[in-house]
Image 1 (cartoon, rainbow, N blue to C red):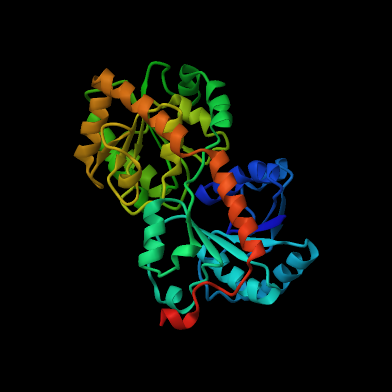
Image 2: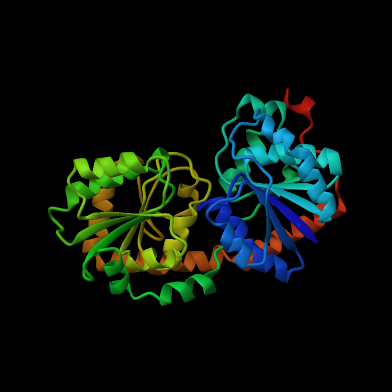
Length: 380
């Protein structure tokens, strides 16, 4: 089976990581992945896995961008030339493209809903969910069923899987003290870490302000912010304004997430808007790093307060401070979060289970290709 994944770009982020993690386990199950996108900084990672990539999708967020439709003949030819059996779309614009490609070629479409989509007019006019839609958590699945009226039979909840053997191998290869030094910290520093795109909704501003208030009581505390994005300049300006230049490090995008994770003593995920899953904090939990996260959709249904993580209210600087101080001072709590967090990942978020379920959906939809599951008249 050949599956063509459609995504806007291959830069660092959850969707790129999602596709990359599926490559080897799906290949072992007889599914060969190809990727169509606008390219990006992570394209080389796919080439190392012998994945064929095509820069045939324009970089845009607008479904009205005429380049999306001008690209359809080339994508249609690619599907026919490479004998693609199934399309898997990951963003709104590529879902729309996949809708038309299905009409042009008859190739079935699976989409993944990676988070919280707003119910805009475009979704009513052209739902474009494909013949099956994968939801990365139960709250995402519920919203698809209730808000977007996607039929129950077409919504498949498949939690994101983490490649624990690979992550463990990479994490164990890094000495924590040396990792701290590599980022300019003392080896005995207490490092608070965060890993996410640098956009306003991820709440980094509140973490930085909380850190500024804590550093006086904890002079060895440092802050490591992993990721990149359009909000980086504003956050760096805030760090300078608060005179934190020597205590806060921005890494930008990283290829090896295990190195910054190895340097962290506590992971804070301060997002202020709805999250579909929170992959980076799950990776931190897999590495037995105690986690502080905001009590937002859908994290509050995945994480158990005081057991797998400490949950706080969004935009709460005081909440961040109280939670981090508790982790520093309460050894029993710290150990419980480490152990229970890892246990949850092992029990619920296996990459093998994820790949099994995705492969099953591919096979089922190939055998039962039919028109789009959400006719236009039902959304009026």
